[in-house]
Length: 195
Image 1 (cartoon, rainbow, N blue to C red):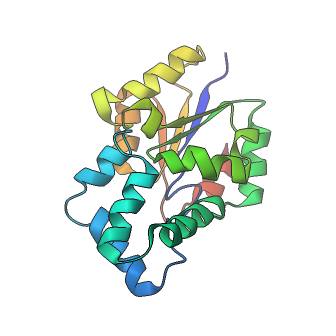
Image 2: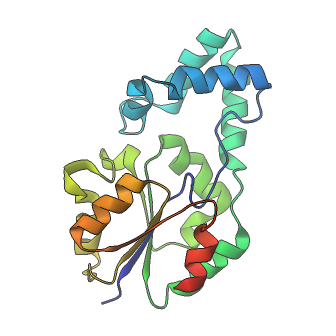
């Protein structure tokens, strides 16, 4: 059977952010509220405990912005995240040698808006989102990796992870797989060309 090529989304395949179209001050407040020191709420969101609507309602209240305005920005930004067409096509070509799995720690909005708008399911054999899986890549010693390896009867030793998370890379390596950490010098395109 073919090995799996696991590819991360945020920080690896895409570098855009939710709410990036807001005015700078409001955008920074959203980042501060959700992604500063205490990430409990956003981590709960990424494990399926909150919906995008609930998060935007909470933010709209904090920012003093009407929910509909914030929601429209959020959805539009989720639908227009930039991903390199060349990299997607290169991943598509690798499907003859690898089972391709987009494995992301993400929110419901990724599956609801980003995936269909960008046609990502046309380039991957499977898309795994922590929101629906209820777990992160590092949880339970990399359980999600093992689940997909079993599902596709894929050999671990030749399966590959490309991810900007050093923790995810270390977890995959500890299982016995090959992990390539994305850096500014060695991005996803660099590694995809090497496969």
